[in-house]
Each structure stands twice: as C-alpha cells, then as structure tokens.
Length: 149
Image (cartoon, rainbow, N blue to C red; front, side, top):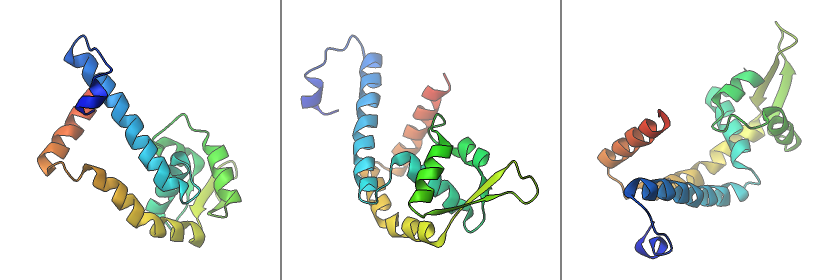
C-alpha cells in the first residue's frame, strides 16, 4: 500500500497493518493475473490445471493428482476439467490398469496455448522485479512462516 492508500485506514498496530496490506496486495495481484488470463479466456483455476498438466506433458495424470497440486484445493477439479475439455485443450481417458481412475493430459492445442501464454506470464512475474534476489528470498521465507502458524 502506498501512502495515499493508507490514509483511509486507522491501524491499531503494525501487525494489523501488515495483514490488511497482505490482503490488499493479494487482491491487487489477483486482478492483474485475471487480466492476463482473460485475454486467453481462462480463469486462474483453469490455468492452474493447465500448468500442472504442462509439467508432465505429453504424459497424463489422474484427476486426484491434479487436485493434490492445485493452488486452490477447494476448486471443483471435475468441473474445471469439463470446461477445459469443452475448450478442446485436454484429453480424458480411463486408466488402462484401473478403470475407476481417469487420466487427463493436455492435447497439442492445450500445450500450444501454454507456450503462447509464456511471454504474458513472464510479464506478470515482472511485477516483483523491483525486489532484489535477497528480498525475494526473505519475502518467501516470511510468507511461508505466516502460513505455518
């Protein structure tokens, strides 16, 4: 938050201020991330699925494996996969060894989309380029420490 944004708030202490600042920054990043993804007709959760699948491309993984790796674990992965199938970005097949499991993989269109998006995603990541490597490491340590509480 910059000075102008802080004028509207009266914080009791710096701990309260940091929590509001984290919340505000999360929303700020979320909106910018969504703007990038909107150009590709994707939601953040859909892109998360695609990124997970791109890590193993051209192999496939199970729906449960995707769910375990999701950033937002409350996401309805089945619904997300259905939407990505409608967009012709994935292939869904029953597992040959266990018919109860479903394997999902990116098709060539989905993989090409990820490649096409790389520049815009790197531009989004540049939002933190004003931080030094040391500051980035420190920030990651502090954020991890908060979540361990």
